Amino acid sequence: MSIADQLFIANCRDILEQGVWDKGGQVRPCWDDGSPAYTIKRFGLVNRYELSREFPLLTLRKINFAAAVDEILWIWQKKSANVRDLNSHIWDAWADENGSIGKAYGYQLAVKHCFPEGEMDQVDMLLHLLRHNPLSRRMVSNIFVHSDLAEMRLYPCAYSLTLNVSGSRLNAILNQRSQDMLVANNWNVAQYAALVLMFAQVSGLEPGELVHVIADAHIYDRHIPLVERMLSLPPYEAPQLVMDEAIRDFYAFRPEHFRLINYRYHEGPGKIPVAV
Image (cartoon, rainbow, N blue to C red; front, side, top):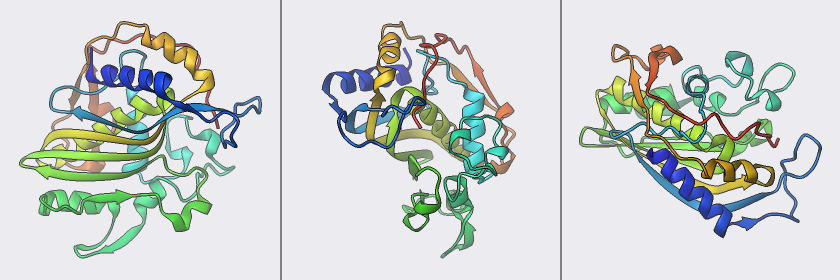
């Protein structure tokens, strides 16, 4: 059983058995028929993934890893906030008629700031510090910018990444304000695990831990039967992730530079309704 499966199972059981419902309250998301999308949740989940041991990819259902990598590169490499730069349609529901999701996600990472090291955006700041001052305790990104929230089509869910080098190991903390456990949990974990691996490779470091901190970890009411079906399945071992070791420039990575070996998975719980 992969560590991703172990933690997903433990988290979901915790939510279903000990969680708090928001039924009866005023909730923002709704289903496509207009009904309120209620959730049962747990506050403050913390999961740790040791990336040197295995790649944390769920086997209880198939994760489209190529699409997940494409999305993280859309945000962190292309620094785009336009869905026309993305090779999937997962953001279409939040985009305007021009394909823009406003001043969210990639937009914030493209904004240049004046750092002591010079003027650069947040991604280049992290890459610069990893190469030139890896013991810095200031390697923090943040895309939850309050002055721009009114111009975002969706507030960032995963909003802050903190990098920290211990010896030769690159560790990271991903902070997330809100997490749809069925749709997005392992999707985000796999994305940011891949991002840490990319940063480590181009910086000459070894991968360490990814710590995922979730403020509001929830399961939507209409997702519960699907989650319960997944929890009844026997997990498989984690796959092996192989990256193109020749890539030394973060901006040169493409989804085809990642290859999964022995990825066994269950086909999935069925069609997953998405609350918007």
